[in-house]
Image (tube, rainbow, N blue to C red; front, side):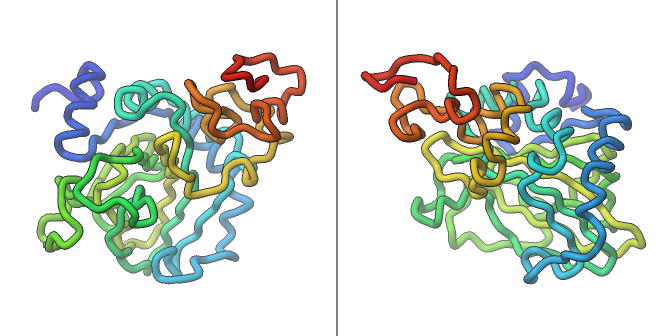
Length: 272
């Protein structure tokens, strides 16, 4: 393909994503935003809280509840090009399922293969995706510093499909780029055999009826969520399904926790 993926119409980007399971959009955010995010994350990346198990990575740092710690991340969570794709690939009222920073230090070993939208193992494979994951590179992803590895086409596999390491590819991309992939595609963090750390942030989105991986309304309580856009508030869970009212609190719209004067829609007799 001679034309860059970034230049393709949104419907072609989504078709490519559905076919191969992933796409990479390069250089979507600039150095100024990267620096701002890094500065806000810096207090939590002091190599004091390393991974608690092999999956988290004993030589990796993970920072959770990010919107309670680094407000600048809102710009990537609702980046217009990502939102366009999400709107193509997920139904209305989709949620932010997880949102964490991963800093892979030298000496880290390769992670185990996994899917992000396992749904607790309750829905057998193969099946349609239940979510979309993104991984934003805040440092260059190289073949040696822990770049994410993927198994293209694995979103169409059954549970017992054999995994061949030779089929995997490393996603190398410059800082400011984003890997977007279906939640049912197998992927893993790579080993870091370099001399520098590799920082990324991974916002993950899911169906509106699926329980979020991170309990967002506790991670980002109303007094913190108030600073964000209505879109991000809704993705955190300060929203209800439409039509319907799944997600209500004490019989009313959860946005009333942020703004008690909120006069949103009415649904089936339930005041919003």
